[in-house]
Length: 230
Ligand code: MN
Image (tube, rainbow, N blue to C red; front, side, top):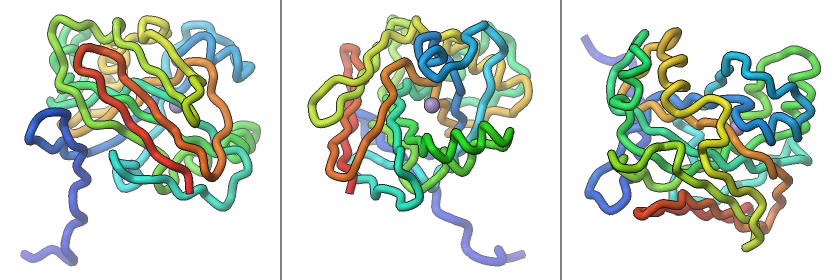
Protein backbone atom coordinates (compact mmCIF):
# COMPACT_ATOMS: atom_id res chain seq x y z
CA UNK A 1 0.00 0.00 0.00
CA UNK A 2 1.15 3.54 -0.67
CA UNK A 3 0.52 6.72 1.27
CA UNK A 4 -2.12 8.89 -0.33
CA UNK A 5 0.48 11.66 -0.12
CA UNK A 6 3.85 12.00 1.57
CA UNK A 7 3.41 12.22 5.37
CA UNK A 8 4.24 15.64 6.85
CA UNK A 9 7.82 16.01 8.06
CA UNK A 10 8.42 15.71 11.82
CA UNK A 11 9.16 19.00 13.60
CA UNK A 12 12.46 18.77 15.48
CA UNK A 13 13.72 20.81 18.44
CA UNK A 14 17.50 20.85 19.06
CA UNK A 15 18.91 19.49 22.33
CA UNK A 16 21.40 21.79 24.07
CA UNK A 17 25.09 20.79 23.79
CA UNK A 18 24.19 17.44 22.19
CA UNK A 19 24.24 16.32 18.61
CA UNK A 20 20.54 15.43 18.98
CA UNK A 21 17.18 16.64 17.73
CA UNK A 22 14.03 15.99 19.76
CA UNK A 23 11.17 14.93 17.44
CA UNK A 24 8.05 16.80 18.54
CA UNK A 25 4.73 15.00 18.78
CA UNK A 26 1.78 16.60 20.64
CA UNK A 27 1.93 19.89 22.51
CA UNK A 28 -0.14 20.17 25.69
CA UNK A 29 -0.53 23.33 27.74
CA UNK A 30 -1.78 23.80 31.30
CA UNK A 31 -4.15 26.67 32.01
CA UNK A 32 -3.91 28.62 35.31
CA UNK A 33 -1.09 26.91 37.18
CA UNK A 34 0.39 29.76 39.24
CA UNK A 35 -1.69 31.37 41.97
CA UNK A 36 -0.38 34.88 41.25
CA UNK A 37 -1.29 34.59 37.54
CA UNK A 38 -4.75 33.14 38.33
CA UNK A 39 -5.37 36.18 40.52
CA UNK A 40 -4.20 38.63 37.83
CA UNK A 41 -6.70 37.07 35.37
CA UNK A 42 -9.50 37.57 37.90
CA UNK A 43 -10.08 33.82 38.34
CA UNK A 44 -10.29 31.68 41.48
CA UNK A 45 -6.95 30.17 42.54
CA UNK A 46 -8.51 27.22 44.44
CA UNK A 47 -6.72 23.95 43.77
CA UNK A 48 -9.18 22.52 41.28
CA UNK A 49 -7.98 19.83 38.89
CA UNK A 50 -5.72 21.32 36.23
CA UNK A 51 -7.15 21.78 32.76
CA UNK A 52 -5.33 21.40 29.49
CA UNK A 53 -5.45 22.72 25.97
CA UNK A 54 -3.37 21.85 22.94
CA UNK A 55 -1.21 23.47 20.34
CA UNK A 56 0.06 21.75 17.21
CA UNK A 57 3.71 21.03 16.42
CA UNK A 58 3.55 22.97 13.12
CA UNK A 59 3.21 26.27 15.01
CA UNK A 60 6.37 25.88 17.17
CA UNK A 61 8.65 28.91 17.02
CA UNK A 62 11.98 27.08 17.00
CA UNK A 63 15.25 28.65 18.21
CA UNK A 64 16.57 31.24 15.77
CA UNK A 65 13.19 32.19 14.28
CA UNK A 66 11.25 35.43 14.59
CA UNK A 67 7.50 35.91 15.05
CA UNK A 68 5.21 37.61 12.55
CA UNK A 69 2.70 39.71 14.50
CA UNK A 70 -0.72 38.16 13.72
CA UNK A 71 -3.00 40.60 11.91
CA UNK A 72 -6.24 39.68 13.74
CA UNK A 73 -5.28 40.76 17.29
CA UNK A 74 -4.56 44.03 19.06
CA UNK A 75 -3.53 42.37 22.31
CA UNK A 76 -0.77 39.78 21.81
CA UNK A 77 0.55 38.56 25.18
CA UNK A 78 3.64 36.71 26.33
CA UNK A 79 3.38 33.86 28.87
CA UNK A 80 6.74 32.40 29.90
CA UNK A 81 6.52 28.73 30.88
CA UNK A 82 8.65 25.76 31.86
CA UNK A 83 8.33 23.20 29.07
CA UNK A 84 8.68 19.49 29.87
CA UNK A 85 9.84 17.16 27.08
CA UNK A 86 8.47 13.61 27.33
CA UNK A 87 10.43 10.61 26.03
CA UNK A 88 8.32 7.58 27.12
CA UNK A 89 4.92 6.14 26.43
CA UNK A 90 2.58 6.51 29.40
CA UNK A 91 -1.12 5.90 29.79
CA UNK A 92 -2.74 5.85 33.24
CA UNK A 93 0.68 5.82 34.89
CA UNK A 94 1.27 5.74 38.65
CA UNK A 95 2.30 9.05 40.19
CA UNK A 96 5.68 7.51 41.09
CA UNK A 97 6.34 6.87 37.38
CA UNK A 98 5.88 10.49 36.28
CA UNK A 99 9.49 11.56 36.74
CA UNK A 100 10.75 8.71 34.53
CA UNK A 101 8.69 10.10 31.62
CA UNK A 102 10.82 13.25 31.48
CA UNK A 103 13.60 13.65 28.90
CA UNK A 104 14.42 17.24 29.71
CA UNK A 105 13.26 20.81 30.04
CA UNK A 106 13.10 23.96 27.96
CA UNK A 107 11.83 27.46 28.44
CA UNK A 108 8.90 28.41 26.25
CA UNK A 109 6.55 31.27 25.54
CA UNK A 110 2.84 30.54 25.13
CA UNK A 111 1.88 33.44 22.87
CA UNK A 112 -1.76 34.38 23.27
CA UNK A 113 -4.19 36.66 21.44
CA UNK A 114 -5.71 37.86 24.73
CA UNK A 115 -8.58 39.80 23.14
CA UNK A 116 -9.66 36.77 21.12
CA UNK A 117 -9.17 34.38 24.06
CA UNK A 118 -11.36 36.66 26.24
CA UNK A 119 -14.19 36.53 23.69
CA UNK A 120 -13.94 32.73 23.54
CA UNK A 121 -13.98 32.51 27.36
CA UNK A 122 -17.05 34.75 27.61
CA UNK A 123 -18.87 32.64 25.01
CA UNK A 124 -17.86 29.40 26.78
CA UNK A 125 -15.96 28.32 23.66
CA UNK A 126 -12.58 26.57 23.34
CA UNK A 127 -9.43 28.69 23.39
CA UNK A 128 -8.11 27.53 20.01
CA UNK A 129 -8.67 30.83 18.22
CA UNK A 130 -6.66 32.75 20.83
CA UNK A 131 -3.94 30.19 21.40
CA UNK A 132 -3.13 28.31 18.18
CA UNK A 133 -1.54 30.32 15.37
CA UNK A 134 1.74 30.34 13.49
CA UNK A 135 4.67 30.81 15.90
CA UNK A 136 2.47 30.76 19.01
CA UNK A 137 4.62 28.27 20.94
CA UNK A 138 8.17 29.58 21.24
CA UNK A 139 10.73 27.13 22.60
CA UNK A 140 14.43 27.12 23.50
CA UNK A 141 16.79 24.24 22.97
CA UNK A 142 15.91 21.34 25.28
CA UNK A 143 18.21 20.66 28.26
CA UNK A 144 18.66 17.04 29.31
CA UNK A 145 17.23 16.47 32.77
CA UNK A 146 19.67 16.42 35.64
CA UNK A 147 18.75 13.82 38.28
CA UNK A 148 20.13 16.06 41.01
CA UNK A 149 17.89 18.97 40.06
CA UNK A 150 14.22 18.76 41.00
CA UNK A 151 11.88 20.49 38.54
CA UNK A 152 10.41 22.69 41.27
CA UNK A 153 13.86 24.23 41.85
CA UNK A 154 13.99 25.49 38.26
CA UNK A 155 13.49 29.17 37.62
CA UNK A 156 12.15 30.87 34.50
CA UNK A 157 12.17 34.51 33.43
CA UNK A 158 11.13 36.64 30.47
CA UNK A 159 12.18 40.07 29.34
CA UNK A 160 10.98 42.39 26.61
CA UNK A 161 13.66 44.68 25.14
CA UNK A 162 15.87 43.85 28.12
CA UNK A 163 13.27 44.71 30.78
CA UNK A 164 12.26 41.81 33.06
CA UNK A 165 8.50 41.20 32.90
CA UNK A 166 8.13 37.72 34.44
CA UNK A 167 10.32 35.72 36.81
CA UNK A 168 9.41 32.76 39.01
CA UNK A 169 10.68 29.62 40.65
CA UNK A 170 8.66 26.59 39.52
CA UNK A 171 7.74 25.61 43.10
CA UNK A 172 5.09 28.34 42.81
CA UNK A 173 3.07 26.07 40.52
CA UNK A 174 -0.32 24.98 41.87
CA UNK A 175 0.27 21.56 40.23
CA UNK A 176 3.87 20.28 40.12
CA UNK A 177 5.51 18.89 36.98
CA UNK A 178 5.11 15.31 38.23
CA UNK A 179 1.45 15.86 39.16
CA UNK A 180 0.73 17.35 35.73
CA UNK A 181 2.29 14.37 33.93
CA UNK A 182 0.43 11.92 36.17
CA UNK A 183 -2.94 13.67 35.75
CA UNK A 184 -2.64 14.22 32.00
CA UNK A 185 -1.74 10.55 31.48
CA UNK A 186 -5.00 9.46 33.15
CA UNK A 187 -6.97 10.60 30.10
CA UNK A 188 -4.44 11.02 27.30
CA UNK A 189 -1.86 8.39 26.27
CA UNK A 190 1.38 10.36 26.50
CA UNK A 191 3.91 9.62 23.74
CA UNK A 192 7.62 10.14 23.22
CA UNK A 193 8.04 13.59 21.68
CA UNK A 194 5.19 15.23 23.58
CA UNK A 195 5.84 18.69 25.03
CA UNK A 196 3.97 20.07 28.02
CA UNK A 197 3.82 23.85 28.59
CA UNK A 198 3.24 23.94 32.35
CA UNK A 199 1.54 27.31 32.84
CA UNK A 200 2.70 30.87 33.40
CA UNK A 201 3.43 32.96 36.50
CA UNK A 202 2.16 36.54 36.90
CA UNK A 203 3.41 39.44 34.82
CA UNK A 204 1.90 38.45 31.48
CA UNK A 205 1.55 41.44 29.19
CA UNK A 206 1.44 42.94 25.77
CA UNK A 207 4.10 42.71 23.08
CA UNK A 208 4.19 44.70 19.85
CA UNK A 209 5.95 44.80 16.51
CA UNK A 210 9.65 45.57 16.92
CA UNK A 211 9.93 44.06 20.44
CA UNK A 212 12.61 41.54 21.25
CA UNK A 213 11.36 38.83 23.62
CA UNK A 214 13.93 36.79 25.57
CA UNK A 215 13.33 34.00 28.07
CA UNK A 216 15.71 31.98 30.24
CA UNK A 217 15.63 28.70 32.10
CA UNK A 218 18.01 29.39 34.99
CA UNK A 219 20.12 26.42 36.10
CA UNK A 220 23.74 25.24 35.78
CA UNK A 221 23.15 24.32 32.17
CA UNK A 222 20.96 27.30 31.39
CA UNK A 223 19.12 27.74 28.14
CA UNK A 224 17.58 30.79 26.53
CA UNK A 225 15.36 31.80 23.68
CA UNK A 226 15.12 35.12 21.93
CA UNK A 227 12.98 36.31 19.06
CA UNK A 228 11.92 39.53 17.45
CA UNK A 229 8.35 40.41 16.60
CA UNK A 230 8.09 41.55 12.98
MN1 MN B 1 -0.07 29.54 29.10
